[in-house]
Length: 297
Length: 143
Image (cartoon, rainbow over all chains, first blue to last red):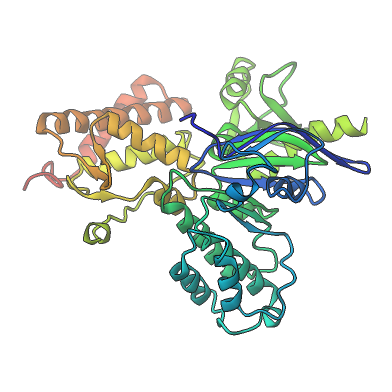
């Protein structure tokens, strides 16, 4: 399964003022949902805007479907549906007119899907964009991207301002998008809502203060980390230990190599009272910590 | 289209507290439904993406499970038809049923050891369980 990647970034860097993104090395194969997470200002939008050629890298190599900007821009963009961080400039246009406008650019435009998505989001086709609530505007932006017939969706915080019920529907919409032609389609979405990552992502990209913390397989992360509560604090070097909360009874240990940690605890005659999973937020905060300390040291 | 409507909705459940990785949990539950006859040969299984979405796991996990089950001959993937439950020869079915029981015993023994029980105590528990169990031996099998 190592054909042409949908997205390939090699040693890509971008800086503005004192913000520096990268180096980013990322390869995304078709058929996956990739979540881009991290605190605000971490570089999520910059990364997605680079994929849209709205921001140009200072250095490095960036390709989509094997093509590069600016030479292949038209060919690339006919295969990409984009939801920008802020939808703007269409206040006077109706949903219907926006569909007609966008459809001209995409040979694979799916009018039926567009109408379905509008109906699902309860958007009246003749209502002007500017009269819609922020959350509904997001759903309209998504409908435009999804109906474009594109193989790749780049969604920059698609659910911001969307109420929880509608957010659920949007996640279903993304999942439905992926169910058709599933070997060719790809979704990259920026979010800071971990619940969305948990529900639909296959891979997670972490960005923190512009630093790229790698592409992680979501289930491997969830399965690869565990919390152990033990009857006393371990001594010396125990493999895999990321954090020990001292003074607790029982003591709480976070491990990123649970098997090795459990064996070492066993060798020290330490009893594991309970073990449990580590949620994505906590894994993320641990993954970020070394870089954070590194930056501030 | 009609084949699509016949697609099975399978009550699978994933637990992250289970030490078994998620793809193994999917495998063993599906295997259980196939061996138990709840999923009959020819039944269409959900696509890997649909199953991943149902279970909130990644498609990497569901693919791994389907590939393993296909390798074991429980399911097969046909171009344009999706994934179907395979026809399994009777002798293979009974061998697998035996395997499932072996697995359950292994798990019980492990649980016992984790609880610090001796082998003697484990044997006593087995004996006691056998005596207490009044399930008709044929229950769930051929009546």
